[in-house]
Length: 370
Ligand SMILES: NC(=O)c1ccc[n+]([C@@H]2O[C@H](COP(=O)([O-])OP(=O)(O)OC[C@H]3O[C@@H](n4cnc5c(N)ncnc54)[C@H](O)[C@@H]3O)[C@@H](O)[C@H]2O)c1
Image 1 (cartoon, helix red, strand yellow):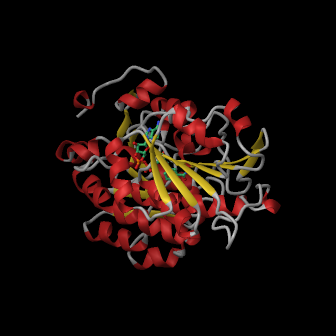
Image 2 (image 1 turned 180 degrees about the vertical axis):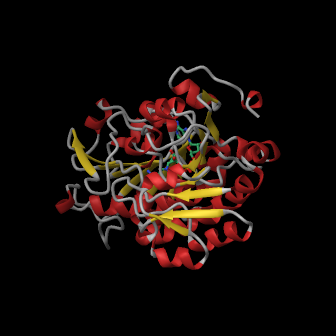
Image 3 (image 1 turned 90 degrees about the vertical axis):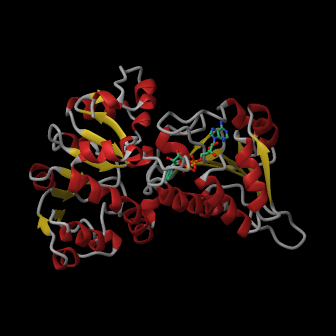
């Protein structure tokens, strides 16, 4: 199969869809890989690194899309890329459709085959291709939260760990999955007083067993969250209902309960955000203020640490990339039902129920396509 890897164009996105090592694996199986000029530079890989393992270098994005059957990316296509996508082309990347009606419409109109990393499943009920990026984003969420709690950054001026005789920061984490767990571990490691909220009692039990002493767990409800808000310094939004829009757990009205300069970090922004006042931001301008509360809502947080993130992402995407290239997407999805769960839009039809629900679009069961 001919495989194309474009350079990411999202603001401050330095990751690339594939490492040279993974390109070598594809090429050893007889596939052709074309990487856009300097696509890997932000992640520490030169054109020469790709050439050495047998890839060719494409000068323009148009070349990457025009001559290849499968595109391997990191982030969702942006409007400049919509026109480049060919009918029937397989796009293997993060899409997060529920947060963008325009992206959903464009992929339906272009009749692409959209295989979304974030809805591919595993036997344990997890989302294995989302997990490494969630680990990165979770750890970064507490790092960023700590920074923006500083007064010169606009925060209320509280040190995460406090000092002798002064209490540490109070950190609320909404959602105790991968992001929430990693955010809690880093915040707790910095010495903060952390509470994780989740709706799943089993998850609460698991977390309680593994977390350090300065982390408490709590069953999530609008009441338990509201009661805590007045003392929280930092709130990290880390909930997920796979494929669907994130539930809104803090309303604009509730911001008034909070202390001025408190910080909200919405990691769930890629699924529309779990605070009513969330608006996606970029690494260039990561924060904004609503009613005296500082908001951080960067939708591609792992893009800030590309050397870590590109390797972590490719580690989990390459196996299915090889299967897709060797078998073709239809046979690969027939053989591997967890991979088939990644199909969101195929030839103009929405085949993921949560995406259909998010925009009240007709839903076509995947069995009708395969
Ligand atoms: N901004 C970024 O750069 C970035 C990077 C990676 C992941 N993410 C996003 O972070 C979010 C979390 O990802 P994850 O991998 O941790 O998901 P996950 O499935 O591992 O965890 C989500 C948790 O949220 C809980 N939950 C669901 N509804 C809830 C509610 N109403 N109250 C409390 N908890 C609730 C679930 O029980 C689950 O434990 C996703 O939207 C993901 O796409 C964003």
